[in-house]
Image (tube, rainbow, N blue to C red):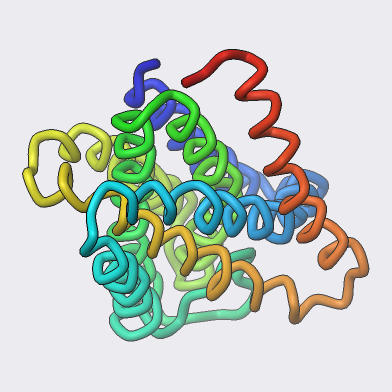
Length: 239
């Protein structure tokens, strides 16, 4: 399977989320919001049960890079870009906060591509599961990026351009993983840390603040969906 094609599909998820914001598709945004909880459960299961064990099996220093991936995303999203959260931004922010959010997310989305490429380097089974984990948070990620740009006073075209930049970063992550030696060696472990951060530190706190009984239910459904998906992937003969 071609990791580039899957990265392209994942990048389109960013654009769909951003398009829903600029077109004010309220019904679509409500559906995308449900991906916050479902995606968190699925991503966490993939990272803990598939990516981490494989990374540790490959390299004894993997735990160090798992931690490094986690810390790097926190630095990018909550230190360098302090005003960032997944989901739609409904309050006015400064223009600088929108651009800071973009810079913070570019690192994260680059490692989305690294995750997909690293997974397919191991086998199609892991690559496909990582692709699904990435895709599930791409929609709310696109919503977050486009809405924070608009809340910062930017127009629709700039909001969509920012969302498109996230997709390009994901594709670059795939293309550069095998070309850059440290990424080829440690990409899987770094991706595990990034995925755990997005699931546990971005998505879970976001849906916990919402008074919607569907959110906690979908979180557990997302984790359970991992087991069903893995069984289907194995039955399809992806190795």
